[in-house]
Image (cartoon, rainbow, N blue to C red):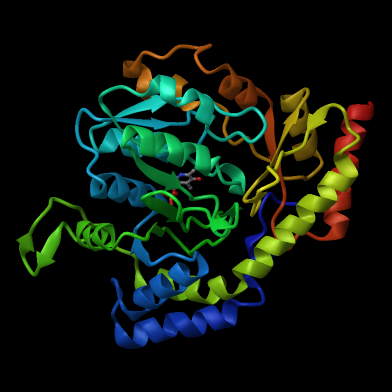
Length: 368
Ligand SMILES: *Cc1c(COP(=O)(O)O)cnc(C)c1O
């Protein structure tokens, strides 16, 4: 049996005709950039995420840069974030001329450890950027309390957490700005790149809307230096169709996760994901810590099971950040997690047969 890490064919087969129809509507009107579909999607995402404003842009990476610019992070400022995340989180901080300052993660949730944040705050700190990794929100109450005490902005990198809940609140709407990515492998994926910023602050919403069109406030009059980061109407049309299914898809992922928890909990060689009791994860990934991780990965691949390592090298050890002068051992929890973590298929259309095959293959690996 073959099980990919993500089966886009299975996801699209029932909705592809509807998507083609919506794309045709875009082609009939030729309003390809920020057209009516983008506005419609922004309204629908704001409603889905329970926030006042959603501003589309070209990617999740751009959404982070736009968010940093909007809250006024500038050259020389410091932004506190996690080293155990996709590169764009810290890359965006560098791109606005600020300095990423890393803080280690909680070993159970893999999210930034609020208890370690205050020690990293300096007079230059301007913002905290938690990531809701693998679909589970970071400890936002603790983070917001620190931000309020030290007058810092909070930008939530919610690329992996659309629709996740934290104490009943929607991830990405708790800080000043939250971001989304519509990269095809995210829970809501486009047929290309796309991203969005979420906020409840009308002034920030206005600024984000201008920054994505070079800071233009009136045709050819620029209040800020923004850049070109617009969402295509074709991508918005695809996303509108898919958004109607998102809740069901996330429920299916949660059901798949539950089955893994039931079937794999006795296996002492692996640690299953830990979901906090006041969090609802949307399981963008199902990431376990595994003994003999690299051998397990090879074994799964040899048996036709897709799996992946998110992420093999924490950001403080990346070559491009050597100027920050971090060294191995600085963030032991992140480093240890990077050495043991492996993500197995969790996509919505995964069948029970496929899941049983994955489960039995993992068990077989550890019994021989
Ligand atoms: C995917 C992702 C991004 C970047 O999104 P793109 O749309 O690929 O630019 C940023 N942060 C995290 C945590 C992500 O997973």
